[in-house]
Image (cartoon, rainbow, N blue to C red; front, side, top):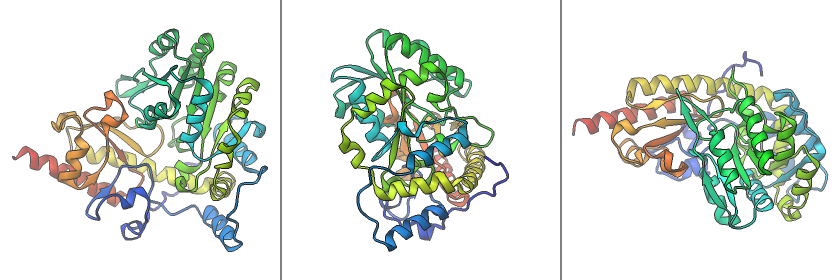
Length: 391
């Protein structure tokens, strides 16, 4: 990534309020939405051009059996991370959590245990209702404002019968890009216990300037033997509604595991999502660099705004993405400060408890927006805090 990219400009709020997606259609217009992981930027030009061309020729059918998507992603992975991906071991699906759900079913039988690491993306808990598996929470360890995998706790969970783990890399909501050393040790532990690591790497393209994101399958031979990664262009390029993600393996046994997943899972890939993903991976990097420059500025802005307007909040900026995990317990607004913030400040944030028991008293803030919206939102929260203190 080049650090010289000019920061990407967000769309004006008048335009954003015309959107019908979850972020902008859930709440009344007096609410500033900084919750669900959608961003507020225009589509990358190559993606817009590709989709408009498809529309003009009525290219709205099914995904064909062979496309250049695997090669497009392999090229992107090599350029961004130095990760050599075999296109023959890339298989598409509808979205990342569908891929995760199918992999959980493939790696674990109903009733078997699967490790999760809270605070973590809420569907990591919900997917077990679908798969019939049992989540075992091994919370991240906080160390001087940084978050790390509890490797000893994970090994104990495997020793106690867990057969798989859902890894979030980079981690949502903390933004942690797990270190190569930590991931390598996780792979060694998993191999010792015959466990599968399912690595959700949807935020991997969003490593911020000066930070390093390490794909799990690039870590070691052990990682390649125990792991399956699930990725998509959707989070970085704001394409969630187009429905395309992909599963990557680097080992014959894990490739066989993925091939055994029903073909219908691949048929659910959206053709527009596939076209958009190819455009993103082949032509979207200049746009992505501009986005990362904006997110880097916004992350620093958010830290400054919280220090000025909400000094009781504790925020340790992460390595990747556009999501901030904020400890709001000092505000005295209970386990779910997001509820009070929505009521009093008219700002919508994700409630911390939905990320697991360790999320009590926390909120997740989406700073993938323009600095004006971010500034106004934090100012509103600060006014609400000061108003509460005067009551």
